[in-house]
Image (cartoon, rainbow, N blue to C red; front, side, top):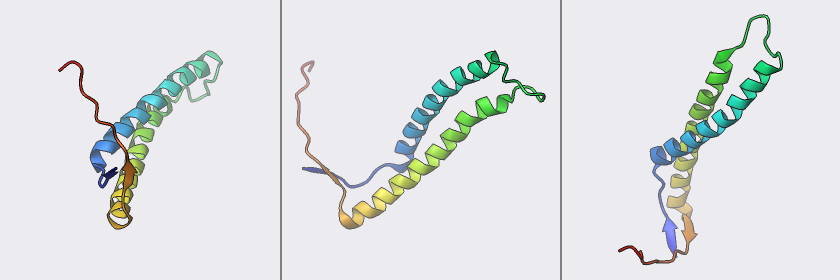
Length: 95
């Protein structure tokens, strides 16, 4: 059995926040096109900051939440133990 004792806070936060950014952009781009084609423009016009800003805001929030989660994991794993995993060793066929 192997144990995950510590997680790199910035490394996991950057990766997860980037995944959330891509995921939110995948949703927001079609949504914004739908709103534009369905006459969803108000008197003030299209609020482009919403369509562009929401994925960026989601990136920042997810970075902070994942970083806090990793810090909490590191704190707790030092006191009560980390996640235990059983791993298989495989030989690389290419060399």
